[in-house]
Amino acid sequence: MFLINCPYCGERDQSEFSSGGEAHIVRPKQPKELSDDQWAEFLFMRKNIKGVQFERWNHAHGCRKWFNMARDTSNDKIHAVYKMGEKPPIK
Amino acid sequence: MKNKYSIFSLIKNAFSYHENWQRAWRDPEPKKEYDAIIVGGGGHGLATAFYLAKKHNMTNIAVVEKGWIGGGNTGRNTTIIRSNYLWDASAGLYDHALKIWEKLSQELNYNVMFSQRGVMNLAHNLQDVRDLKRRTHANRLNGIDAVWLNTEEVKKFCPIINTSQDIRYPVLGGTLQRRAGTARHDAVAWGYARGADAMGVDIIQNCEVKGIKRNGNSVEGIETTKGFIKTKKIGVVAAGHSSVIANMVDLKLPLESKPLQALVSEPVKPIIDTVVMSNAVHAYVSQSDKGELVIGAGTDPYVSYTQRGSHDVVEGTLKAILELYPIFSRMKMLRQWGGIVDICPDASPIISKTNIKGLYFNCGWGTGGFKATPGSGDLFAHTIANDEPHKLNADFNINRFVSGDLVDEHGAAAVAH
Ligand SMILES: Cc1cc2nc3c(=O)[nH]c(=O)nc-3n(C[C@H](O)[C@H](O)[C@H](O)COP(=O)(O)OP(=O)(O)OC[C@H]3O[C@@H](n4cnc5c(N)ncnc54)[C@H](O)[C@@H]3O)c2cc1C
Ligand SMILES: [Zn+2]
Image (tube, rainbow over all chains, first blue to last red):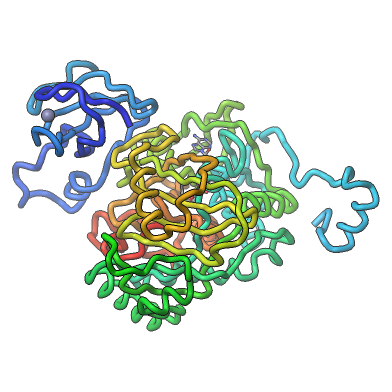
């Protein structure tokens, strides 16, 4: 449990949010041309990083907006919060 | 076995005030090379090593563990053992394990305190009732004992449950597997470690794997905090840290690692002589031999390697426990802890070869792998020794995420633990 600084509402308890998992996994533009391997990669395979990971979060019990976050999964420290469509502000 | 444990050894050692018991396994330095290396000294890894030595004659092998054996999820779980899974593949896998549990203390000459006190799963809504009844039928078709209990029968089997129909999630019935139960988690790790060690397996603790060396598409060895160790076969059984090791060879797994927590109360006199689980409200309770209530909560809903667990999750679980067991309202909780569980999208494990030669993964057990420890070790040993899966774990290969042949136990009820 930790605090999240929603880009729209400010700092709130993590329990108000729901995690959407790894960010920047783009939905394939030509789904018909995808092989089974590529589908598996898109649907299921995750880096599941121990360390700084880019994630999508939704302020489910607040403004209900989606945004991105860079969070260190080894200590739950949040390094950056940025909007959907933006590139990660840190490496 | 060097020092066989028996009533005679107990008496003999009593005369010397129990000061002369020998250590149960050695503490060796790693050799330069092994025929196979198991990464992760939890129950599954140690069982794998034990069966590699016992059934496949592979004794020049090692288990490397970054901390102490059994210090991962093996020593952190609520020890519920059952085999009443819905699908045929899961039924085969978990009942294989349950059958080994039934004789494990004898096989290991180590008391794992396996107790078939029964596991009851409660239904709290109409969908639960349908799902659990369906599962009972499926279990019976697979030769797994299962009965459906109505509300009165639930009350009779476990009188402290509040079966009032006026509560938020009333008890509408439940299933019971009488062969199910619990075991002593540490003893499982220690028993397998002692057994494997006696056959020559090196158990190397405080040795973290930092990298995997490859030559082309084959493995050559592991880089560890105790130096490089050569081997042609690596079996990774690292639970919540499986992806960390897979990322060392740019392999992606369909896993997310999340904290899962449990807590125990102060010890009290025997009050609950079975295990009661309730998926709908996410609360599980049993009583340890020391008298503590052992309570399992849910996972934190995000990826994290912080071995803690969130407070709101515990709060939700305890609210449900108090509604179902009002008698516990004055109990004090003694300890709370978390483990990192590796969750697969279909809530089933992976016991599989990979497309790298000599690299095998046993992972994805998530919130419920303790029950499978002996079976998982047996089947993973078979897979490593023969470079082919056993028929009982063939369906649990990594390629099911490509082919779509998932073993979907998520929707199949009673999946947690
Ligand atoms: C709170 C909680 C309750 C649970 N309740 C139940 C239950 O009631 N019933 C049930 O069936 N299951 C339950 N589970 C799940 C169960 O605990 C696990 O599925 C099972 O114990 C996994 O065993 P393992 O040997 O694979 O993992 P672990 O015991 O976690 O062993 C993995 C080992 O790998 C080591 N390792 C990791 N990375 C490295 C590295 N780089 N180098 C060397 N070693 C490494 C770790 O230190 C660890 O010791 C629960 C889990 C938790 C956390
Ligand atoms: Zn918001």
